[in-house]
Length: 239
View 1 (cartoon, rainbow, N blue to C red):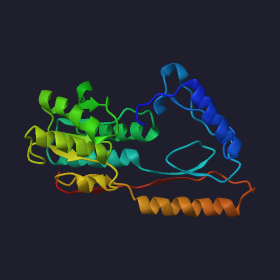
View 2 (view 1 turned 45 degrees about the horizontal axis):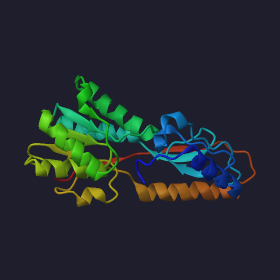
View 3 (view 1 turned 30 degrees about the vertical axis):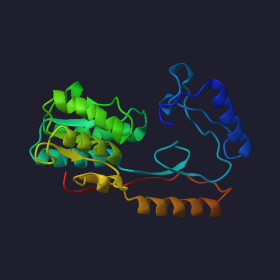
View 4 (view 1 turned 90 degrees about the vertical axis):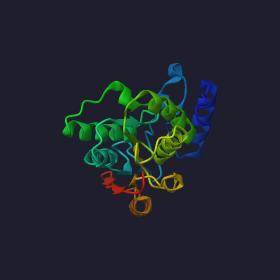
C-alpha cells in the first residue's frame, strides 16, 4: 500500500526471491519506494539474463522508451501563461524519479521564459499521487494563496484539485485553471473535464513490444541499448 514502509528483512526476502527467478541478479530499492531513510539503497538491475525493455528512463545499459516529460510540462505551463495566468502553482507528488524531476523542469522553463520568478510556495510537493491527497492539499493552498492556475503532474492530482475548488466554491475554469498530465482516463472523470497532456500509451506499448521482439531475435548478439523519447500532446478541454 502507498506510504507503507518495509523493514530490512522484508527487503532481503523480496530481493532473494527475485534473484532465484533468474530474472534479476541484483535488486536494490531506493528511498523513494517508501522505505525508511536509514534503509535507503539505490535500485539497480545490474544484469539482465533475458531481454528487457523498460517504460521510463532506466540504466544506460538497458533499452527504454519514455515520454517527453519536460516537454509536456512545458506545454501545459505555456498554455496557461498564454491564457494570461501569471501566478501558476505546480502540484507534484513526493517521489524522486526522473519523470517528476523533468516535469518540474518543464514548468520552471516556461515560467522563466515569461520572466516569472517561482516562489517556493508555488511548488507543492507534500502529497501522494491520489485525488484525496491532492484535494486536501489544494484545500489548504487555494484558501491561502492568490494562484489562478495549477499545473498538475498527473490527472489524478488534477482531479483532486478540481474537487477542492468545487468544494470551496471556486469556479473552474473561470476562477481557476487546471491542467493535468497522462490522459489515461482520470481526465474524463473530472468535472469539468481536465485539459491535460496526453501520453500516447498505445504507441508507447507498440514500440516497447517491437523493441523487445528485436532483442529476443538478436539475443546473444552485441548491441547498443536503444533509448527513445516519445512526444506528448496538449489536449485542451474544459478546465
